[in-house]
Image (tube, rainbow, N blue to C red):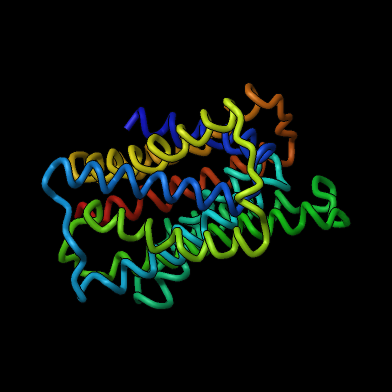
Length: 287
């Protein structure tokens, strides 16, 4: 769990550095392709590689197209326009959006604790966009922030779908197929809007790609699947909140980003909201 938190958190400034040398969609394409290759190799080596059946295809497609293709494309496009520290904060608003979506489509009860967490989280988002701390005339910043919130919302939709799906294969066994399917639309968009063949990789870019493919994509997915099976739900839920904290702090150290009062207050409110929702969700799941 500690490794996952550090790898995911520290990847935000690393991705920001990579985007100085590679276009956003090309970067997403490379990351998904490398992650898929690593996971196919892992499952083949352990004798667990299986072809998904018809029962798992809905979740294969939703994760592939929403959580992987659209999500990674949007966070890269957003991160190219927004500071890494603010980007990770916006991206991890996912659980805030899960709460109303699950209440509407799954008839999940909106408890007082969840309602309080939702109010705190939305208050944090409003704080991040208050006119005294955010320049609404900056079109690039507006587009980037919208993309990051859109990525978080798509991730939330996928989470709600996963909660209702009955798995025939394990999530880990489905992951490489989801990644390879998710790679296809991103690759098409990269070749239409960018020029991946014109890329001139440097040693620095190879290092960031090696970190993102095998580590931040393949390893963390395998490790998080293992952790969620081995530890109590409330432990994993609360531990996941450390990822945006590590992301924001590592962005300050590596990129010399100044978080600012607006981001600090907004992040604190969002984190408090996420903690309330996570604790309530995990406690009810345990019960």
